[in-house]
Image 1 (cartoon, one colour):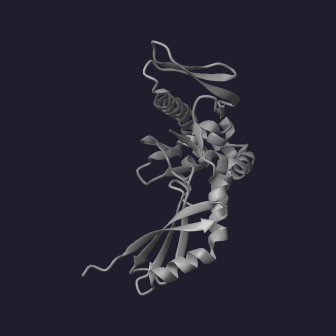
Image 2 (cartoon, one colour):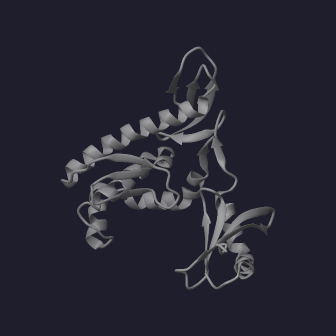
Image 3 (cartoon, one colour):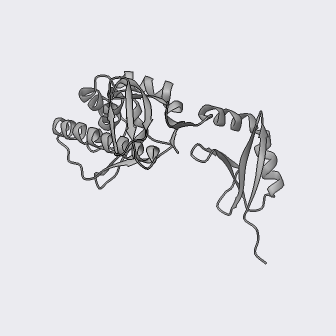
Length: 237
């Protein structure tokens, strides 16, 4: 008989019912409770010998923590007609229009999304990511020359745990939500990752190198700490 390894329940916290997955893990020695900002679900990993009831009880005892995690990112802000976004250092309102053409363009106050098949959200998402990729590529080129480093691929990520990432293949990955951050914040994240191609740690030399190419580093860090949850709330339909 196959032993059940996981159980799905809900935790009542405040006005919310938070989905909880209780999973038995033979590698676990202790309880581990986490919250997934992407799916808005909780996960508790428990040792194999612990019962599901005990795992659920542990999560119940920490429901205030779960509620705090949820409320930091709730309610979700779906980008749609009428949404106001910081884009290219200007607050702009998204306007969906139905016409016999397909295009996206901006004015100082608006982002106009025109689609003849009413696929506005998809068209906006594609356009935003294309515009961001071009901006990132330009910044990478400039900073790479300053730092004397080389990169391979530039990718966009949908991470809920990091704003940027680089690997040993010299690929750079940047979170797409940074399209809605100030330009100096985007530059800081790119500089941060590029500097790791010279300094593979977060030591004193690393931070000095970042500061040398991004004087607004501290300002960017402060902005992200204050606004990161608002960025994580942003989703396309």
